[in-house]
Length: 472
Image (cartoon, rainbow, N blue to C red; front, side, top):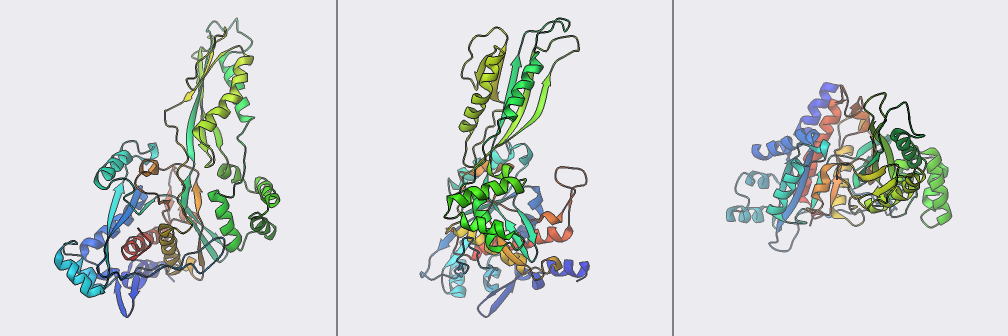
């Protein structure tokens, strides 16, 4: 298929996004202009840190349901949802131009569907400062939504994140259902000043170097837990990834019931998977260091900032305890007072080591969104599968789509939305193979075909949320 033909087909609603219910067929092309603008506006702005949430309000008229029930046919340890395609009545679409809650609309909708009617509230929330934690934009959005709708008022929230991976003839999509915590440690060393011609055995910079070295020589333990999101993802890989080595596949499957196999799997991943440490454990990276003012003056104040990403099984408190245990003896060795996170400092002659939260932004690991028996997860995964398998894109032709949960190693601004819903997904339907030149850099780009696939996904997700019984 020529590129021009793909673009025409991908954006032509009659060709690429069609919805079938019974003997009637409708398409996005028949949607009222107002609704179409909302859908496309949402999708085009997805790269601008869009957050999508939907809350259905159900009028139960005669107890019947006008929506299909999703079935899980796989029965494996990695359940796969059936593809979900949108199913909309043309007559109902025409009525959307009128007042949703009018008596005329209710009566006509009942006549059209002969059953229950579901009208979702769709909120498009556009953040402005996600890169600095959403401290202005996301907090304002949160406060408005909590005031307007209340806590746990939303059925599903979809934010940026996740990824896709092509494994031979299988395309695996990884929506993030968990997110690591974060903590920026500031280590500050205060020592007496003086002329560099009469130096002590160790200057403040030398002592700071010893503290950093000790911290890096005591990394946080890595352990694979069966209840971890990454372990669930491994089970999906074992069930569906054709490129997974057979011995690793056997270890993953055997680890379900064998502690010995679980330990062997952990060891194997440590040796063969460079990302395993970052995924399964708390990481630390010394990113900023400073101290000293001139070449002939002893430094009186030196500091380093160490970024930590906290594993889902740990916490900010556990991290602080580990750091205190590791660095306390170093301060004692240099006869320095030691103040760990405001715990007070003893008296020592040679100076002071202070540990603190560098920016007062310590963040606990995010609550994990359930995937087992979860209607919102089934809606999301079913929409992902249908979007991929119904795509006119040549690269997707003949590919089987699989969905596996993942954990976000970086942080988004969804931390401000935890009280809005228990079903937060970080997924933008963008494949890594569609990205050019990395992220946060010069000439960052995305393939046009990949961008159109993102539009198709969000279009279907919004429409599916209108038609499903999977949202509460």
